[in-house]
Length: 442
Ligand SMILES: Cc1cc2nc3c(=O)[nH]c(=O)nc-3n(C[C@H](O)[C@H](O)[C@H](O)COP(=O)(O)OP(=O)(O)OC[C@H]3O[C@@H](n4cnc5c(N)ncnc54)[C@H](O)[C@@H]3O)c2cc1C
Image (cartoon, helix red, strand yellow):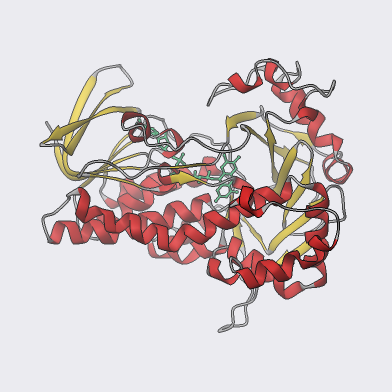
């Protein structure tokens, strides 16, 4: 049986960042992914500006730039068909320069990252699905699975890192997903051509039955992502919750019966064009590929119950894609894990107790982000409140830029997840009738 220092499950951004980090530190790493690359992914495809230094450190930023991605200067938000409020990322206090976010096709990005991993000397096994772990005295010491010919295989390692995303094998095996609160959500995405966006922003349109993110990904392509709540009454043209909606498949292709009888394509187009602002943006263009769909509900994850195993990326929990930070969080979680793994090798200790430092560090660094994401979720589905907060933001550009700076991972979350900031932001909103029950949101 082949043996490595570390086995990484999954070749998405988290897995590739993990493998590169450990490879740079001199460890013998193998990476397994069930997919054959290049492969596509439902994603808004913009990467927070805060990720640039990490991509640089991993040695991949210049190769990504060579793909001619788009650089976006911030977000433009429309609340229930209001005019878009354009908010730039705040300029750096040191350089005075305004950062930008990368907007690039996942089809290209993920393949590029995996190629980089392979070139660095990591042993990459594509089309190798991990189905179980090998244990020794209660600690994970390897993985088992099958390859594309359905032949079973086993690999041994001192440590396994699961970067398998929202359906990671560890989440199932150890029952780690915390029951998500709130309604089920589905995301749809497709690239369009012939769409001329007014400026280099990610355009977020909030309206019933969900929101869209529209941004150029370079080379004449525009990515149009729609996220809807499946319990949302307006999904059905007859304004009734559909039978069977709550029994939606948790992943994979969404059936027409869940979409008011529409096929996914028809549903996607109908909902997109319901909103006058995005209709104006999209009507000159055309979809250039089939619509992809995926279940998209945020969830938290319980701590891993044994030694020898760590989780990175979406496998550690998933925040609603409205703030588009998943890739940054994945890259950063792998950086944090790298430090702890290195220390584990130095101390020959991969016990649960030793590795739990990583959970603490993640909690410290990301806790504020997760809270902000939940607050924003409570806000965007409340029309009156959302409109008022948007007005509040347009009247106070410093607030607006601080919020976008946190979302873009260039300012710490505590900058806006503070009572003072929230009170100032919401003061206008609370003057009216709308009342946000913060206890429900938090
Ligand atoms: C609708 C939507 C829009 C989004 N928009 C954005 C955005 O604009 N910006 C942003 O930063 N983030 C966005 N995200 C989040 C982002 O896509 C994820 O955070 C990111 O892909 C997580 O990376 P990962 O490496 O953890 O997982 P993934 O990218 O999911 O990669 C996991 C990999 O593991 C492999 N795998 C899984 N299980 C196994 C197994 N058992 N054996 C072998 N291989 C396995 C899979 O094949 C896959 O390649 C969005 C998400 C959604 C749903």
